[in-house]
Length: 198
Length: 198
DNA sequence: CCTACCGATCGGTAGG
DNA sequence: CCTACCGATCGGTAGG
Image (tube, rainbow over all chains, first blue to last red; front, side, top):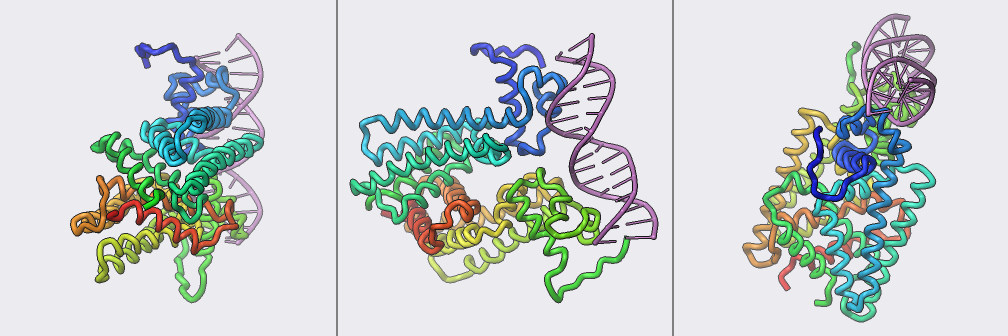
């Protein structure tokens, strides 16, 4: 490992550790990833990691909460816009597609590894997720109220839509032949078609 | 090593071990589940498990392949029926909803823990899955050809639909208030609406 | 199916 | 950031 010639702003060692850990967590899962694995990717001995982080679980929780915060703040912008309910739904779905399609390992880790958090982080994460889902539900119900959305159960529709996008988080290495923009169009088209008034 | 005598009369100890292991794998993940965890649930010492199974990974692979075989054989029945392409798609989606909504721990383990298989099982599993997906793709393309299905990319549509159903595998403990039949209708309605000719 | 126990490896610490 | 090393625990084996 030589110098990183990124023209970007300088990353802290802690950021590098979080990124390498996220990649490993996505590949092997949290439990199967060892501190020695992470240290190897970063290029230091395992003991040296502890100068930058307090432990393995702190790495996981910082990954989970940083992406959760990204979702929440981007949702706030969409919620405070003047768009119609159905357009807000479309924008939220696009947000999810973009985050998952970028194949940032963060998305995989937040979606699949959060359950390895212990209390109190475990409960806090669940609470954050519940709040996010409730905001999303409110918009869906607005769409039902104004007649632009037709679904028989808003909760089931929400979970179905959010779940349907998650395959993208593992997609990058298996289907490199697909074009991101056309994938985005197809998914959004299918989902919006599914909930829109005929 | 002693001879293994197979008793088919009733539920064997091996079956009990596989079931308890599947439940634990769903809860904590494969890597975080120890043989002592499994032994505790079964009611024996860890060393005694090895009279019925050859190791931890064999437990995982038997779970993954047994459900994969269930999917394959049920798909065969649907494929050999006289139904139209769009009706076959609907039946396949119903099959997925039913298996995931039953909340059998098998579904979670097959979907999320298969990556912990080592070679050659890992490759064999991937090959089985690829074959299944290709059969499914063929029917979608039949639907496109006969004009009953309208999607801009059959592969993206397939992954989106299959992925959209997976949230059900974790649903049982978080949303006990929902009715299975109405959930089924909402999901299938949304997805079929999304791909059907307007 | 048990007791006894193994080599390996885990997350993490001490001390420089 | 390193070397050295810890107690705990892992999957699995020996032998009865």
